[in-house]
Image (tube, rainbow, N blue to C red; front, side):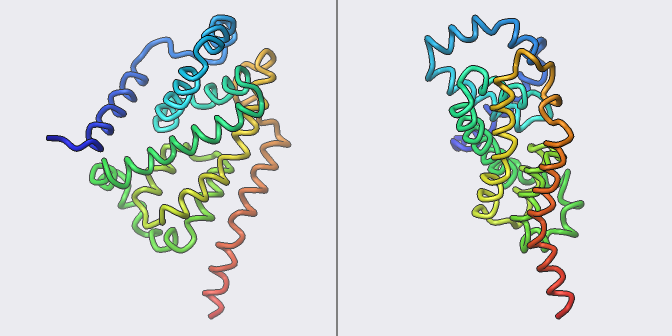
Length: 223
């Protein structure tokens, strides 16, 4: 009889497949068009709406579909900035933990066949300084989260360092998306939230988060 973890993994993969092939998946323009109906549904079924938001974030963040940003902006628009930010952080961390678990345990053999050859040469460096590398990647948002989750799961990175890098790394973007929800009427895509000043600030924070790793490497070379 299949274990619960295998059943959960299978259900999640099925959900990903459905999301990938479903036509007409809502984007920002669809949300704006149906905002009144969505608002009424949230007002009448608040708990269900929050649970659905978390579930969709888990699906979209762990897939190549570019829909997670729209969901996070939606949270700021319908739940307000403060609750939207909290839900964004919570849902993103949950999604990243699910992706980490899938990579490290449920589908490890399959992912190793696809990615491990590229990871093997830097595995020891990730084990020593993975906290800083993954924190930088989360903040910079230049690599999709689902790829970060897979690589982290395959590496020797400890769960503690992965969780800490995820918690700290998703905060800036979660706040930006929640704030963007208040500007939903004026924006057409998530990219409009990241003006050059915001992008430059995130780049500086990402670079600063790598400083401890650079200092450690410099110390080892000097010794």
